[in-house]
Image 1 (cartoon, helix red, strand yellow):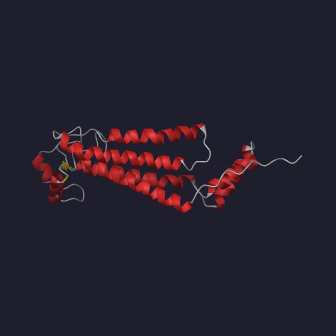
Image 2 (cartoon, rainbow, N blue to C red):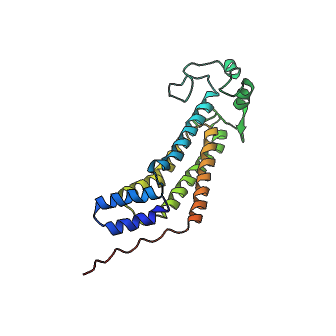
Image 3 (tube, one colour):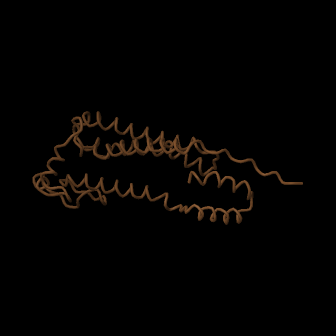
Length: 217
């Protein structure tokens, strides 16, 4: 997409208001570079599936409560003893017990801010993780927007959403997500920001928009 952007801007400048010609030339350009719009969605879809799987497995370590939300828990409750002695997918009972007793700086990996009596100890860990995830999301969006040479009303709306709505969603999710998921949020969002910085540095600055062609008189 980064390689095609300067050529797309040049095409728009050459075609002007001729939308039919622009569509034809755009398809030719995409075919020459083996570009597929859907391929850009694949990493997001893969990450979403991994996140849903991770969230489901982490919730499945505690089956003492009934959950009516799909993929977020069991429809039948177990006693604490049954839960500790029951395997969770590929995790043996002893690994289930290990997870149930695991913590990060005193906060259980399965604990959330809304489902624990030790709110203070969980908040000490959860709040920094959520803030890291939200700031990384905001910085990633800001770095991406800084490379845009032209905007449309639709792009400005999307930019506002990625700058503020997505980080806000991360903050809200921090209230109900377990510590294990918040670790994933913080590391994944930080990794995305660093990865984007490296990619942008390798690509270099974006080429400026070419001036419109002056018609010959």
